[in-house]
Image (cartoon, rainbow, N blue to C red; front, side):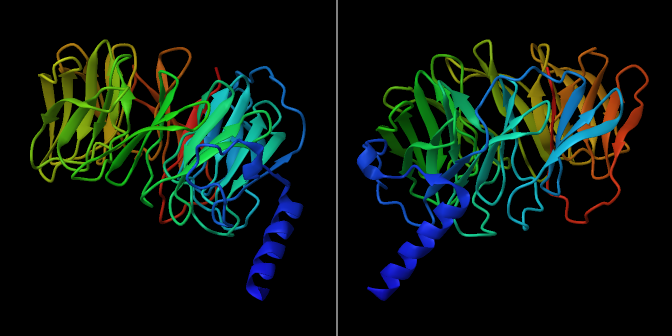
Length: 402
C-alpha cells in the first residue's frame, strides 16, 4: 500500500509540474488500446504554452537540429541565429531524430521523450508533451513526426515501446498501443487512413483515427526497413536481404524480392516513385542501390558501390541523390541507374540533404559546419561554423523553410 501511494504521489507531482495529463482511460480515447492503465513509463503529459496558430514562413531561414540536441533557426541572408530551443531536461545532447514542418509549425521530438510544437518564425513554443516521466531516459530515436488529419504519430523504444497519436492542437493523447518489442526505431507510415509500423519481428496496421488494431503480422526476421507505399500496396524489408510487398487491408504477402545475400540493412534508405521502389542495401564489400517494379517485384536495375557503404539517399527531380560513408556525393538517374554526377567531398555529411531554392546548390550538416555545396563549382561553402565539435557525433538534421 505504501509503495502504491508513493508511486501515485510521484505521478501527480510530475503531472502538476509539466502540465495536464490526457491518459484517463474513462475518456474513451483509449478504447482499443491494449495499454489503458498507463504506467509512469507510458504516461503522456502535455502543457499548453500558447494557442496554436498558423504563422507565416520565415523563408530566409534554415532549421538546424544540431547534434548536441538543440534546435535553432539560422537566417541565410543575415547569417545570424534567430532562435534556439532545447529540451527541458539537461541530458539531451543528441539529435537522434528529425523534425516536421507543417502550417508554419515545427514539430520536434527529443531523445528524452519530449515533443514540442514551435513557431517557425519566433521559436515560441505552442505546447510541450512528454512520453513517459523517467528523466534522462532515451525513448525517442530515429523518429520523424508523421502528421495527418490533426494527429501526430510516433513510436517509442523500451522501456516505453508504444505507438502514440497526439492531438496537434495541444499535444494531448488521442490513442496509444503497446508494441511487442523495444526496438521501434523506424518512422511510421500513414496510408489509406491507416498507420503502419514495425516492432521487432512484427508489423502492424492501425485505424488512424481510433488506434484500433486492424492487423498484426509476424515475420521470421526483425523488420528494419521503413514502410513505404506506391499508393496501392505497402513495402517493408527485414534486417537481412528480403523486401516484401504487402496488401494494405490484410497485410498478406503479395511478393518478396531477395537481393544479394551479402547485403542487408535498408532502414530508411527506401522510397517509392511512379510504381517503382528504390532502396539502398549495405554490404561488406559492395553496397547497392536497387530499382524494383512495385507490381511484380522484378528488378529493373542495380548500381553498385565497391568498398563503400551508402549512408543516405533521397529522390529529387527524377534522380537518386545521396552520399556514402566515405563522403562521396552522387546523383543517379531513376530511369536507368546510371551515375549522372559524383564527387568526393572534403567535409563528411552527418545529416540529410536539403536542396536550395535556386536549384543550384544543396545543404548538409557536417561535424563542424552547415555546408552549402555548389553544383557548378563543387565548392563546399561553410555557411554556419560551429564553435565546438563533439568526438561522438551521431547525426543532425536540416530543413530549408519553404
